[in-house]
Image (cartoon, rainbow, N blue to C red):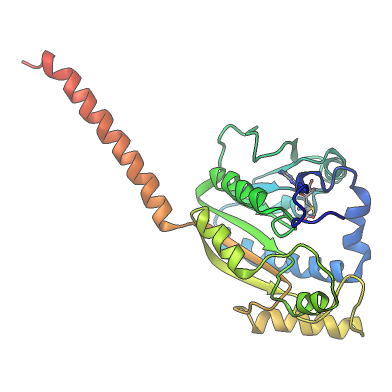
Length: 274
Ligand SMILES: C[S@@+](CC[C@H](N)C(=O)[O-])C[C@H]1O[C@@H](n2cnc3c(N)ncnc32)[C@H](O)[C@@H]1O
């Protein structure tokens, strides 16, 4: 597989022939199943902590086969997914018939004409994408985020995690993202991290699991509760909002525009004043 360090690689093309098999992985590959179960608990907590008063309109960017979209669909006001891969969207369409699913690249097109969403999610996307696509995607998501909305995304391949350190020593080079890269991406888009949920502390992979599985699962669940600020988990879920400074500058530009319009209107009325 080509990786983000390959200059000809464009992550947009990565899943154009994938679909059902990808989706099945979350039910069949033990490590994926474990991560997915823990991610669902994190979503339960996010909905409880941030959306108990009203259900948001949800946009799932790079929704793929609709894993996240389907899980949240009962608890949001509306469900919209976008992806560039028709084959992935076909699986999502079969699984979530009520969702609005759009085949598009949000970094290049805007099928929503500036519509804003109260909750945007982007999972298993950022560490895999090449740096320019990461930045373009983040900017597109911020454009569609309501002023009081939240962006929830994950870095499921944390370069500083124990398991990544070990696999690197074994000579495996796969795409990943450092905590610093996540911070710069978030800051650069005018966002701030409100909360982070680390998942996946034990040195396990999709090919190699510690056993018994029940014990591994109990350790993982306890560790993610006890070590909320840790930077060594493999999969980190970030909850972000628009940074206060970004909101202030937006409102300042509105105030600026309004006062300029006001001055212009007053000036044009002067000749008619008694
Ligand atoms: C690993 S899958 C993740 C699917 C889903 N979010 C999940 O967590 O199961 C990554 C997805 O990103 C999509 N993708 C890549 N570049 C994209 C872009 N520019 N706009 C929309 N989707 C994109 C791919 O087609 C693929 O379906």
